[in-house]
Image (tube, rainbow, N blue to C red; front, side, top):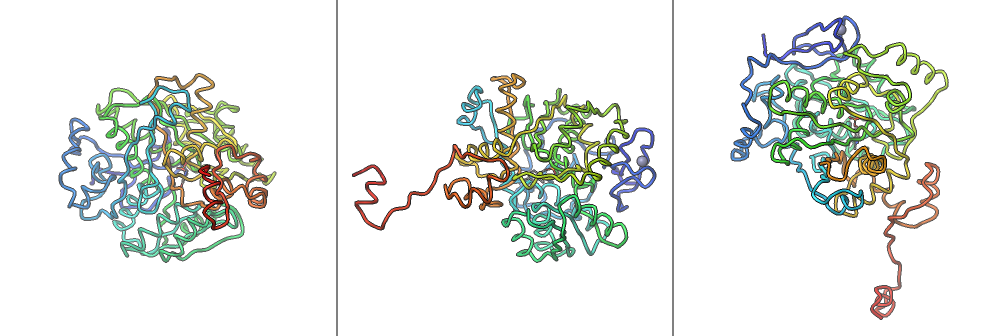
Length: 462
Ligand SMILES: *Cc1c(COP(=O)(O)O)cnc(C)c1O
Ligand SMILES: [Zn+2]
């Protein structure tokens, strides 16, 4: 028996399954699955700083990977089975300019810039792990539904490694061109259905259940194992000290769930002495978690959250055909598949949930980008959340705060241009329908004749 197994997260079931099985829910009760480990049988370092020795062995791809250099903390594969393309070369960056804007002490606000991954979003952290598992079980065909970045990520792993083919399902209309063009470029079979992300995911889950196709959405418990390492790199960037806050946008809640699992395990292993608080930020047009937690007082409750409450809400959502709607397309999701795990993360990390408007998201995105960290709209929700939580006094000026910048700026240049251009047509087409009525951080291009005097005038030099 391997040291790793899959386990149902429901405490009344807790059934276990071999890592060799392809599952995205517990066959007995339908709950989500974790990958769990017999830690006594794993050579876990005594201190997180021991991982630093891998920095000197960068010619080994498994040591070079920002995910797999922590492989003793996600030990479900052998080194030979690991599928890596050099993901996770991301670093924690102090940002004093934003700290001042958020009325925080300088030196206390950090950005974990995950846009630096091979496909331009944090998704690669998870996809390297799912791809590894797909290879372990001999999958020939993989699939995912996507608001864009999951498909770009799966497509790059399929394209670079050649271990399997991939099919991606996307909704109509809303997908950012930067992301869709990646899937097409990397050669993914791309199915664009008439519907939104929630529809696409329901469809691909059904198809994967009926056919030998390996599902790579974040219901895949192996993906979340890879995403745990984002938190390890945050700790690494802080000299292995635990920050006070992790702030992350919430869509399908895979990231927040994996962060909670990472801290739960690190604490249990004695590798950290406390856990940070977690702030999950929804867009107000896709605020299911916020509604459940803040209005409905839904809690993890030791693994027994109120199932009737969840079910009841989804029934009315279906009845009224309520659809998610936000410019932050990566988090435009109404039925977060990892809801229960995110509730667990909130419980482990004494977490909170907030929602922010598209105006706040888009303005915050521009403010982040103006400090040199280009990110896509969903990532802007982090600073929008910090601004909000500073006003509320929940985050203190001298707390140490880490914002997860989930995706790269070039994923969605259309929106960036609509914001900066000052072109009323672009504005009214892209921004006004979402309630964005002003662009206070716009930096429009100055249009002048190709004439020295005119140019000098525009520059204030004549
Ligand atoms: C997928 C994605 C998110 C949402 O993450 P979840 O784990 O689904 O909550 C946020 N931002 C970007 C850029 C993403 O690609
Ligand atoms: Zn179960």
